[in-house]
Structures are given as structure tokens and as C-alpha cells.
Length: 189
Image (cartoon, rainbow, N blue to C red; front, side, top):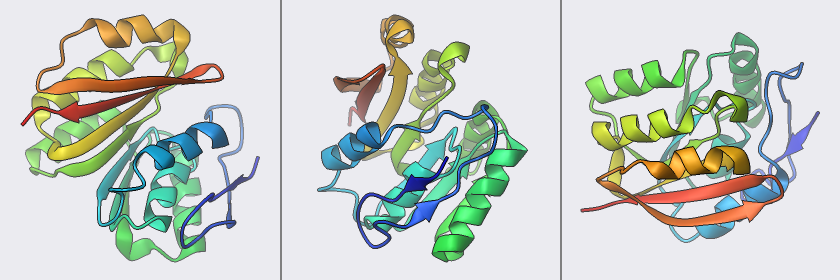
């Protein structure tokens, strides 16, 4: 399956996606919606793309003006694909790739006091990882004060994702796109 960058400097460029059925790329509709929502503040952001798959979300962010993207995926195939796409767009100096589980990467970033302006989370729907990851993000202060977290979840996993208090994070909005729900979180100052 091939994906295209839908806006910005690399608009129309084709990206590779990992072979096999272990990744589920975000639909073009969800990607477009995400960047329509954050188009006013994507410029100069530092982004984190968790469960990055092909890296399409993080590369789209760079195409639209983000200054740096960190990609995380535990699949060696996905990490190889992300690195190929980074080379394809010649953005090696604006990226880093961590091939490890998301929770472990978040622990590492917290220990290094890294922060991000935009965090995108798209875990496998069947694993129901989103609630634990949101809690970990809430406790770690990885999100800058004016930053945003966007999380993609299935309708069936939505209730579990919304049950837990996440202070200092708060839900700004949720939107439905096909079988996917896009959740947007901010951080209380």
C-alpha cells in the first residue's frame, strides 16, 4: 500500500508502508482532519509519532512546518520503512527513530526531560493500550503547556479511553471518521 503526503512542502510525494498486515495506517481522512485542526499552530512544533507505522503522520507534520519529529514503533519492519521514508524526503536532520515499545520510549523521554508540542498516538485497536499511554503521558509532563495530544481509537475502545481522569490533561474534543475516533487533548497550565 502506498501513502501520499497530503499538504505542505512534500505534498503529493509517495511514501512506502510496511509490508504485511501488522500496521494499520491512519486513513487519509483522519490525517487530513488532524492537520486541518492543528494547521494554525503546527509551524515550528516538535512532534512525537507513537506507533508510527510508515511515519506518515510525523512526515506530514514536517511537510507542514514542524521543526522536528520523533518516531516510535516497536516493529523492526516499520522502523525500516520509516527510515526509508525519511531518506526519501531527505529529512534525516529533522528526525529520530526509536524502535521500541511506546511505554518504554515514553519512560526514556521522561528521563531525558524531553518535551513535545504535538503527540500523535495510534495504537493497534485490539490491544486497548490507549488508556495506559494517556495516563503515562499525564504523569510524565512530556507535553508542553500549549501542546496537543491527538489519539486515534476505535468506537469499541472509546469508553475505556475516556473513563480515567487524566489531570493535567483534558479532553478538548472527539470526532468520528468512519470506524475511527480522533481524540484531542490539551494540558491544563
